[in-house]
Length: 71
Picture 1 (tube, helix red, strand yellow):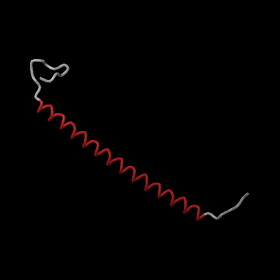
Picture 2 (cartoon, one colour):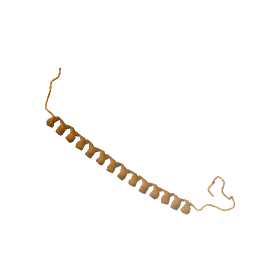
Picture 3 (tube, helix red, strand yellow):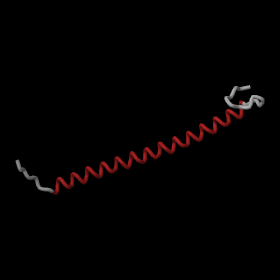
Picture 4 (cartoon, helix red, strand yellow):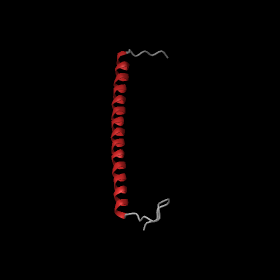
């Protein structure tokens, strides 16, 4: 019998059932982690693309304004 805190001591826990529950929890956590990584990669790509867009906008603005030396 496996000692489980707060469990009814008259009923033995089935090791196969414990393993199955742990495996199900692990698979659920793995799926959640995969979705979180996919969201992070999407956010990272969006940030990269916005940075490139900002660089292009700043470069176009710098090219369109005439150089003036006010010093």
